[in-house]
Image (cartoon, rainbow, N blue to C red; front, side, top):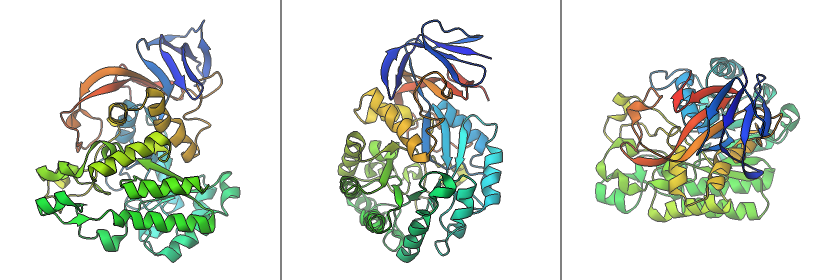
Length: 430
């Protein structure tokens, strides 16, 4: 069926304008402006119509950890958060290090509310010992490789992976992106929060900022040596942001992301000893949070990514040292960015839509300008709507949100995937 988004303000790379948006029954935008007609009308008055959001960093847990999340529930939560594409991390069980598991994830994501973009592991089993079959996976269309959850510790192996990745452009049709979880295990091992004043006060062993920064420094040096495209995941320290800024100024092919929890929360939140605030990399200091915000504002950090990491209640309710790290993020990212960064709405949309889409290599169908002929992967957001965060009310099978009970501003009214309404008036349709 065809439909019309009526009465909204369109914001995309081209700017802002008041316009209706007509979507044809082929899933593409048919008209933008006056004279739009359709079988169904969705009210967009008082709202902004934007290209759908793209999350570069989501843990969907399937296969292997379906008690915490499935691809279907994760995609539903993503759609409720305005996302039309989720880049799925490979730390599943088994890991996404071979064609069979990647194809399984694709099959599971075929009919869900968001497009699922599988990544591939950089090393076999994410064990950091042997390079995964990157060429085979690139031949299947995998464009991002990461061992997320662990950083590749061996610099010789990392150099080999980077050198090999630069030769895969012909298989993929674009440069391969290597996404690194920057954490030197020898420094972070045994630490459960940021090492600093609050870890000393609380008696919780900490991870120093240098555990992240040393790997950022190493990989920037290897980018300079190899020319590989390196994407730095969940930057969390002022030192990391400064190094990425300098690398970009030098013209190196590096990109970076930051999470909502790393620009809204500090290590002081751990004073409650509540494991919901345990995450890797850990929540940092006020100065680090300010640096991450500045990096997002000046373009050093290219994208907001959620690092959506669901965990069951029985796992997260263990003691702080034993509980797994991670937080929910898909349904709260937009309002937290809107209120937490001090940026104008178009800048927030760029960080959540077309910039991450470009890094993921899916700009042909996500984050694209809202114009006739382009795929209708869209979200309609009400920037003034207020609501209260509840983990139990979210689509996820888990409820580990660190923002429980917080009143936030900005909510998704509608989401369209390939022209099909998957969220209408804030309610998931599938």
